[in-house]
Image (cartoon, rainbow, N blue to C red; front, side, top):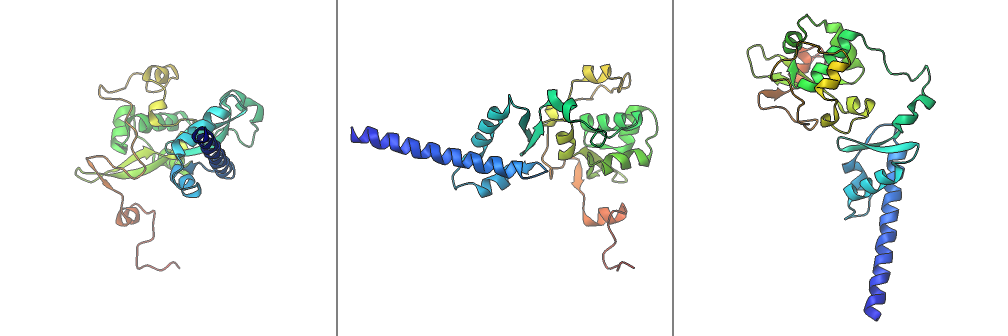
Length: 232
């Protein structure tokens, strides 16, 4: 009888600790304007806490509410429920308006990354202006991934975690299918045979045919002041 009582007490204590861990995780995500990494949440929770289980429990709890807990790669964020976005939308927070060219380039990068500028132009069938890529990079949706191990070592492009967050995607596999993409009027008739949705890679991962971007690469691309030069 005593053993049963002890087990019940231990279960009650464990559940109380779980609830406290859930409250801490909830507070950490709520207090951040940007998605919060699981590793950061784990560092703030009691030792041994099952972060994945805690976050999935919270996600299920918020699923029917006006605010949802969404996973963005290995990060978490609170966002307005998709079906209520029209209620809180204002002129100040409307989605950035992209040109058709920018939408095409963004779609190609998302579905075909890692991809070089020349490959983007080959898929589109027209030249891609530097300004179009600049707009996507300034929006924080596209990044330099690496440099292709081919003559000239062209830069490769990929999407960012902010891209996933903005479009409400947990991972790249949640992107619309190609038929939906065609239905939206993008990439209508110029999709190559090997065009496919990529498997998601970590932020720091590069493909087998890529080298990571280095400080010297960034200097060459004009994104950093060369080392040894003082700002005037």
